[in-house]
Image (cartoon, rainbow, N blue to C red):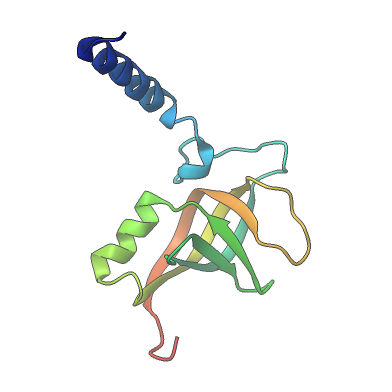
Length: 128
């Protein structure tokens, strides 16, 4: 039977192991952290609107009328939170994104944000 000390040691080891690999999960990172080309395709630049949503964050690609799903980006999220409520503001700019899933017509593609430029914070319309 394991003692409390042994259980605590195992719990500590598991948490340290998880934190050591946390930075390797590219789906949870952005602003260049672990976001690079993968087997799903090359990174690409889009002009779009980045927004924080309830379940996922996303970039609405304006010219293509499609939504790219992101796991979020701490830098971009903070730009929105600095202005106020996440439901009231979006970011419009140029985003370099890397695919985390295969492109499939009519489906949302998962990406990570490698970098961003020319970003402006805009207030969402009242009827949004």
